[in-house]
Amino acid sequence: MNDAQQKSKLVPEIILERDVPYPPEQVFKAWTDQEALRQWMGPGKICAPNATMDARVGGAYVFPMQRPDGTITTVRGVITELVPNRKLRFTWAWDEENGTPGDDATEVTLEFRPTAIGTRLVLRHSGFTDRDSRDKHGHGWSGCIDSFGLYLAGKLTTCG
Image (cartoon, rainbow, N blue to C red; front, side, top):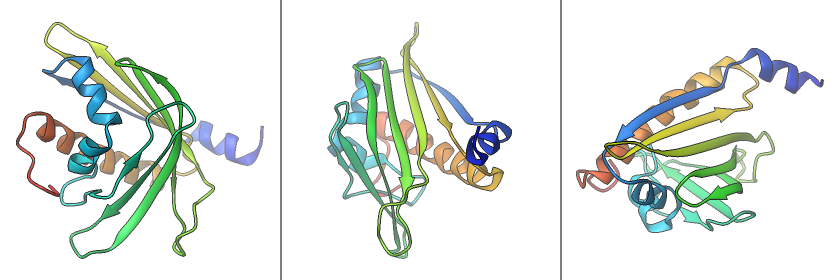
């Protein structure tokens, strides 16, 4: 086991669950449709109006996250598993400050579980090498899931 794997074992992953009153097909589409992602991806006032998504195994996505002050930080990755309306798995790596793709990738897995009232969305983000990064991502994902819920409900205004 290398040092990164050892550290990853010591830093728990993020697991967020949210029940939404929409069918798995609608919830899955909001995560895989480029136009939908452009409307909701990002926590609070951070948004990704220029997001790209090639929703297929081996396909890439790029989410340039724009802050209210105009600052942009970009996360990108590759789809590693896609089971329509059930599961989506992808790598997650932030670009370096100079704009080149980062090589410190983690992994995000989304499960779309049918329920009596709609869908239980389970987000699992793993592979962190330090608690600070994990905690920051946990805060960001919580805000993204809030934006996602507002989008599905038709209550999201542009960029939060």
